[in-house]
Length: 427
View 1 (cartoon, rainbow, N blue to C red):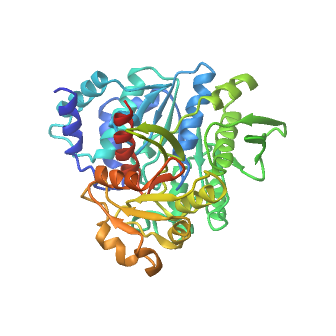
View 2 (view 1 turned 90 degrees about the vertical axis):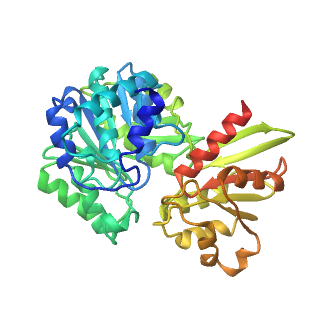
């Protein structure tokens, strides 16, 4: 099996199948020797911000000299992005070797989904590479997520809002109950707590599990200050840190990471300088990522953001309302068919001069022509439905000049596809 064959073998395992439950993952890991027990784990759940918190933790631990792994999803351009240690992605050779091992191992055993397989691969690779700590991001929910087979040193729950309602419930309280499923007996919890309907659910679960709760805004806090944040720690001390990630929501996400490492300072102590240097190294592509590129005879400004649910789109609207100077805004949008655009999308459209609807792939993406009737009548005259993604990008470029801004959002798959095209063209 070579690397393309390994990718194809993985893709064959129900890429877009959602199967909630721990039995298959737990059984297979047990037969593989429970590699997840060979290192310390930080477990992250939530609706928005999981990746940013994980990327921040990784940079901070790396700055402190610790061998840290990070398992995230989804990826933008390459499946290897889901598996990283420090600043390095898993190599093609290591990925292929582990996939070959799993191909042989699975004969006659329970048939895992794509996400279950990538979770198992991550845990095997981290154990093989002897990481000291692994940061695991849930794929969906928490209680029945494949990553919930671990016993973490700390659980982090980011902002909770509506998403995946078909699987997690149609109320904030129900969704919070699924996220609360990562809380284990006696294991400390750090929670953003900004959604009031979620707070009593998480608090109750912590009480039932005898898990100490550190709550943003009560036990630790952060405010925007001088292109960064002023963080008030669990011990009451206050420090200013510069931030690399864009968006006011990163104030909360960064403080969650800082609070978690404060709880774990007995295992992973960090100095002020290590924290400062770590925050300067955080990278999380495709989330309010501004690219300035020379393509042909044009200078392009392209803002890539993975906003794909109402909370994410509302944050994108706020960011575009307060920043990113431009003459006109061209939005390339493509969402999954199971997502509703909601009122947050209508707010976003109020900033848009031209809307280009497209889709990144055929299986789950919404048909652009089907989205058109759902838009306000006042918007439809400035909408183009264009496929495939490359043609949508070309269409946007026909309308822009150096003072305009192209924004790509609606799906991380769409963001990843367009980012790959731009990077390849820019050389």
